[in-house]
Length: 490
Picture (cartoon, helix red, strand yellow):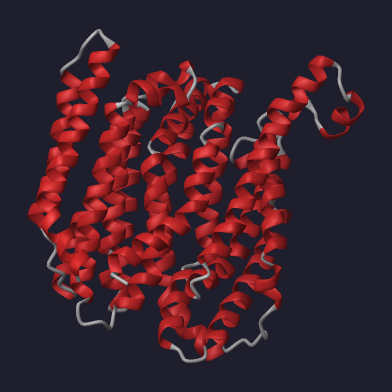
């Protein structure tokens, strides 16, 4: 099979769980932003930022190390068993320590009256960590359908519980139906906490669904192998942790750097409008699920570098197309959030571009993974994290969440450029930079045409948007048709 088609097929399957789940989950964004005021919705955004940081610490780069050692070790079951035992032990230790310190943690992050939030998130992030290696195993053995099935069940269950607690239970109480049952399982005072309860139950179900992956192996811990894996993984822990700082710390900075009376409103608005950029994030996430095992599997082929170059070009084309689609039809897309959140829409194009740069960086990062120079990834990520922290600290007190958005873009763009420069020195890939930069520039030019060429008529606005999108598609087809036809003949 053509390698690009193979990667596209795997991206589609792995992305099924994300794309379908996120599209349906999009229904929760208008729900949350209409049921909860910005300060309440801000609680969810902040706590999930903490959980993202913790999940990176609890998996400590072992997922990528698992892929690397699965590709080079003959005894693959031992690699899986060693990685899984390591995660099981460290997660158990985390639960014991975190639960015992839960009250001081609640006071520290300003939730002294909601100790339950801390307990719930300790359990959520722990269960998510426990599923990391089993999910990686499914990807490594190309069981994409089982991977997607388990992910989809988790997502549908989570969404269903949200609808049950946030919509159905209040409706039943209002109508006076099934009040005995509803009062048994529902309390109005919990409010935004039902988002977390739904996640907790869905995560527990995922553990149950993955039991075959836990029980079907012989548990055999190889200390020598584990030490080798950890030497490979620990720099990736720094990469991952610094990366999560870049992705999520802005919510935390907004809370603690702005006046307390407006901080959670700003966190809520920023988090809601950030969700609009998730249309691009969904594609990048699906791509990453397929890309790591794909890139490693192609590493020893003669035309590996040409494959990587082609992947990068088509990746940028898709990202630019998504960026244009969202921004040309932002008048429609904005209805995903409630009207109280519209003031945050100016951050959307900035965050879309930031995520495009991040996706390109993920493509480029293959150079230090294949050459076992993961420390370079750590250095680049630390550089990005320091830049994120400095820019947020400087800009948030001045321009609020706009400062966070610009800091995110500058951070990811800088990491992308640095990774490209060093990557070309250590693992040269002949990327078609003229095409890649040209497509990005074209997308930006068409975006600015729409931004500054305004019409009162909705029909004229949407006609212009469609025309601009067709222009981009036509240009791409014109320049890529020869290579696509050639690949088809091959």
